[in-house]
Length: 274
Image 1 (cartoon, rainbow, N blue to C red):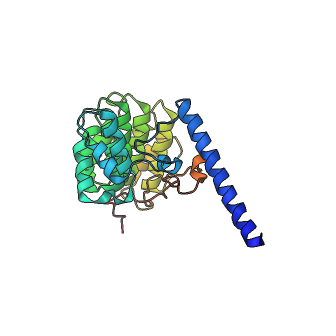
Image 2: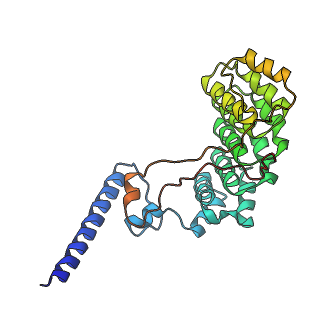
Image 3: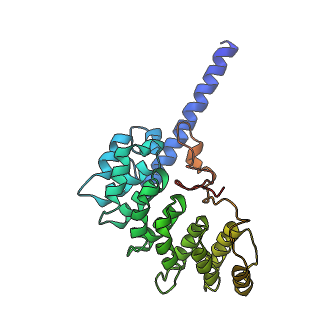
């Protein structure tokens, strides 16, 4: 046997061993209920790929199964091709779904692929009865810019109107893109919020808008606010927070898509001040 043949056999053996280990792990996880096999999957690699575009679209429109609508909508929301008008229309329609998971996934799709024209949908869902939908709506409003959102965002900073601090924290982050005096007034007032996450995001937005940093001293902020006309002269450009995570173990396998990481960026429709 030549050295080239031995090398080929070694590579083939490693590939088969890797596939066997992967299949064994998959079977073990499926047996213990940790993972659900994708319908129609014929291999370990098919399982990790998730639904193809046809299946995802079919699931997203399933009138009888809310779980399929959620999974299909979310799968489409995270795909780069979903900026096509047909998918945007699907996200808009599913944002009115009776199931909160579907509404949440639809907001994710609009956040990733929509524009300023879709802000009213997120504004409406900022008042949703389900907290997960309200959180997603606030995050969507970090990624889509339209001044029509400002009144709703300001209202959602009021603990009497929005009792969940996690929502108020996301709203505080979204307000950092709107260089308006009423926004600064609301943010300064929110420095007294009882929740530290709200305080932190409020301070970050104030620093972005004004270029100033008086920490959590509401009195100092109020004094500066009163004494200055152009509040935004030293402000910086707003960017929403990016997303990064390390690979899960199975994402090191061949043909498995990488994590959906993305850099921070400015919202769709946002125009920085000249």
